[in-house]
Image (cartoon, rainbow, N blue to C red; front, side, top):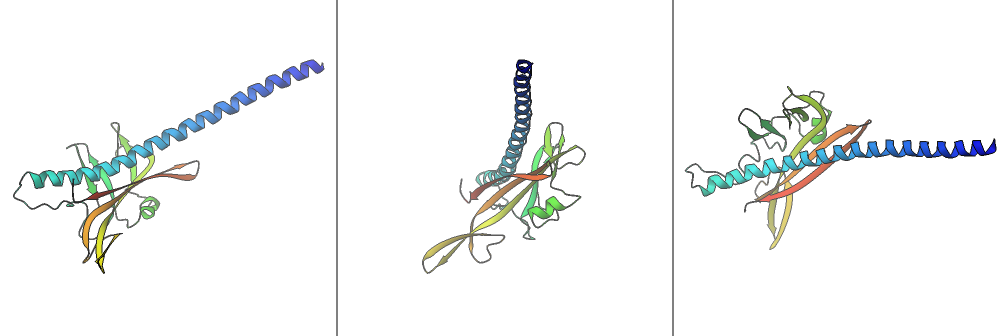
Amino acid sequence: MIELVVAVSIILIGVVSTLVLTVTTIRGGKASKMQTVAGNLAREGIEVVKQQRYNNWLKIESNNLSFVDWDQGLYNDLYENVLTVEFNSSTPVWNLNFDIQATTTQECIDDPNSKCLLYLKNGVYSHDSTGIATPFYRVVTINSICKKVSDGKEEFKTYWDCGTDEKVGVQVISNVFWKEKGNWSSVMLEDHLYNWK
């Protein structure tokens, strides 16, 4: 009888250990998948902003008669720096949307009618609410990189607007947030774009 109890105990320990390992592996795989998707969405946000800057350079180099600044479209006149990147499937073109009525990343995520929520439609993540809602929110922030010369020393800082200081570049921050089991997770990528190729 003792041998039977010991044998059953060993089998139960093996089965329970296998189940725990399987559940942990499945959870880790799902978390890894969410992290990978979020990382790619954050990278996509940076790339859309870069593309706008590249398009400006192409217009400048093509000797287009209309005047184009290298940072045209990377800011708006209201000094709003929080935006979303929008995919228009009918054109198909990516655009920067400053009209999200949020001044901070947190404000956009907390809004129950958030324009930062991503939807999946035809295999593309976008802010088009006719798609299927996903757990992901993407917010892009663009700040000016300003150069100030004081006492012969150069100082660089990021602001919404440089004012009288020289604007030498832009800081682009792409944040992707999602909620898993009641807890927020996020991926943040940052890049700096300057007035040169």
